[in-house]
Image 1 (tube, rainbow, N blue to C red):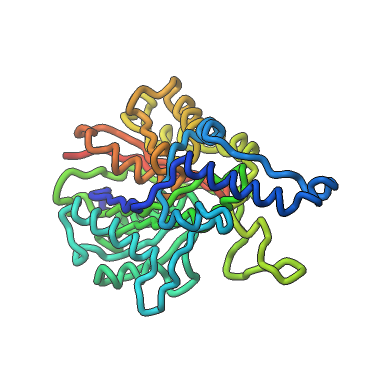
Image 2: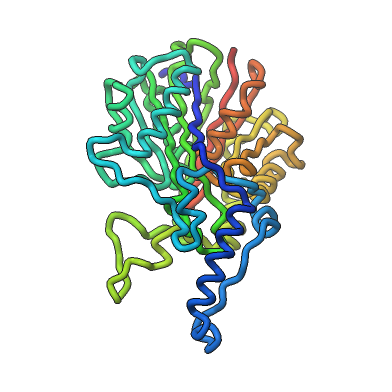
Length: 374
């Protein structure tokens, strides 16, 4: 048996930003158009009138101040309200593979390794741009990696589930190393016209290199333990799979074809599940709350993270103990906890213990206990 470790991470950040102020202007313009076009039905009581959004509402509900996106022009057009991404030919790299390539190269550079040192690629994301061929195999090809690759999807928990799969393979000796990449174009499956969720997501890609500790070329985080859990729920759902459904009139415009959630139920049901999961994982590995130097949580909602931090630590987290990147990146699904880890781990000292955790639709939750070396 070998000891697996995280030896490098990388983050690809899109160049375009949408601030809350920009988003509110576009959303409210859409609402005005909708209400004007449906004025008669609204007056008759056949349709509800849509309400405006505000910067105050968005920040209070989420803690988000801005988000990075692959295309802001389409999103901010009140007559479109979704990203408009160029249709690529089959001979061109897919957009997700291109994003992942950038993050993967940064992870390799940080680890002091090259593609020749990688045996496997796992593309773990909440929504893939196609069913097949696997995006992971395309990334493998772009990097010129010998070995194998596969896609996996566990929604917002995809990254930690991918890390567990990679760590288990490294631990068993079937491979020496693996890249876990998380290209998330969340803007493409968000319903920007829904006031309850129009502000939630952003786009990003992350990459994590998992190797045997003996192969580490510099400082690393030994993966001491991983744990995953799932419990089926419809409270977060997206029905826009490859089996596309249509309305009775033949138009594919069902609201459930994009991101949907029952936020109150999610908050009530997921938080205890995550807190209990982390507590059990720590207890089984003799890790006390006082042993944790850092919590890198899924970046879904500031209130959720604050609640989990208090439950895990038994007190409000101190500054830096539970870093948030939500205000800058918004919810980036599976990539969120890895962004937090990548940007807020370099100050960890030899022997320090931390925990990465992501959670989301499924319900699903994955946690990774790590220890800094070097």
